[in-house]
Image 1 (cartoon, rainbow, N blue to C red):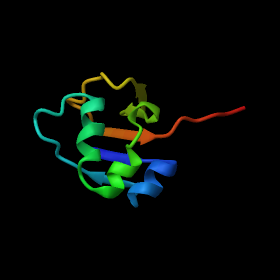
Image 2: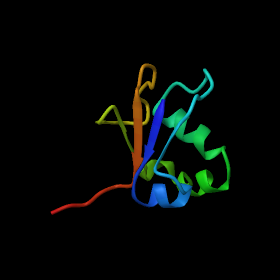
Image 3: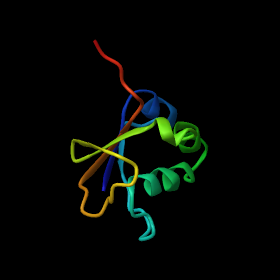
Image 4: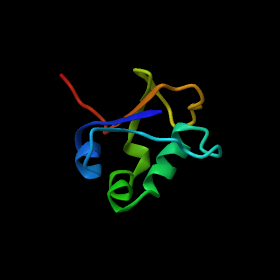
Length: 83
């Protein structure tokens, strides 16, 4: 699946996107965040506070407990403010 990173998540990881194949036990967005955080220091830094990370599956915002099966793209970004 394609994983896309935005804003400071991208800056901390050092790349805008990548293709990953998480193991079968990674079933939800929250699981994926945990698995990514274990991939090295830059990922651990980006996902050090998982509760603040927002996610979208195929361009639709989703909560951490959402299943990732069948997802083509998962995006991670920090909270946004607007006006």
